[in-house]
Length: 375
Ligand SMILES: Nc1ncnc2c1ncn2[C@@H]1O[C@H](COP(=O)(O)OP(=O)(O)O)[C@@H](O)[C@H]1O
Ligand SMILES: [Mg+2]
View 1 (cartoon, rainbow, N blue to C red):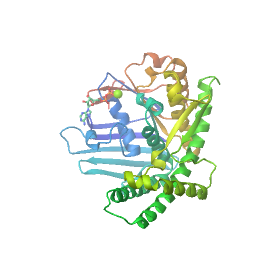
View 2 (spheres, helix red, strand yellow):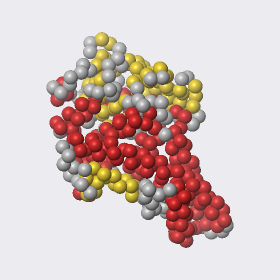
View 3 (cartoon, helix red, strand yellow):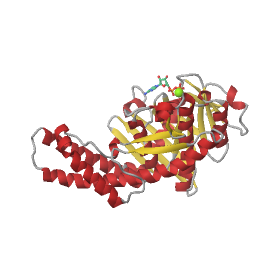
View 4 (tube, helix red, strand yellow):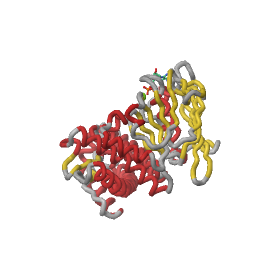
């Protein structure tokens, strides 16, 4: 798929911006703090209805303004699809083909993006929450069913925690109600686990292949899903449910004492291993970077396999962070079938590697000009 057009209204430091993207490689060039990342962020918002940089939507609205709009036209095998995200201090509205979408799971997935930014190193270095969010967002992009289930799971978790707290504070005593909540919670949790196992198995395959290529077969990358439950990918739905229920029964006194749910997919983690060693603990900075890159690039193949179209690729300030070998790999990907949007402060190290002609957009103070002609 391709993003054909992007229109911003009062988004961050852009008041009115309209861009067309006729080329498959689009470079946003400019000094720091000019608005390069803001553009990639806007594309990400168009795809996911949320920013990758902040949870606070107000930050996206231009200062002194009440309302902000991101619009785009996506070209897919099925035709052109207009998308729109409206942000206001009251909340957010999303539209597909000019029709408002009430559910997140009905909006996300129409534009598929892969974003690679310097902070993506935290995928390997950061805490478990970073990796859970990664799994949830990426899997959510290709599976509305998963997104829907995740919303449900989080609601049930909230309800269950609230009731455990009441039990802890002795404001409630009825454990039968906890049984009812637990049963629903387990059923939803099992769906989450099954979806994650399936997704990670595929992603691991693609990541391993890329990591082998980048490291010239020296390193083998594997994933290990570290559950808060001793579950495995080979278990059936029934086995997972039985195990999950048994763990919750075992933990019940502790959960009632602490007033919170102690096991479930909301507590799980994903480990990356290189030659069987945990990269977070034992990997060098370079190995951690390569791992993050392999996993991100693997998503391109995975999305293509799942939905039959390539996602678009957003590369924020990453070229200068990578050594030649890794840059080359990235550029090989770019010069294939994947529409790419890339930010950089300089073209020097890029130009010598490129074999396609990019569209270059000069970014300064929230205005954008394309190679001489004003847009
Ligand atoms: N809500 C906002 N309204 C107006 N300007 C903003 C807003 N949020 C950020 N900015 C401005 O955007 C600029 C940073 O843009 P960014 O895209 O991160 O820069 P870079 O080109 O370095 O990637 C800064 O000048 C900042 O003041
Ligand atoms: Mg930036």
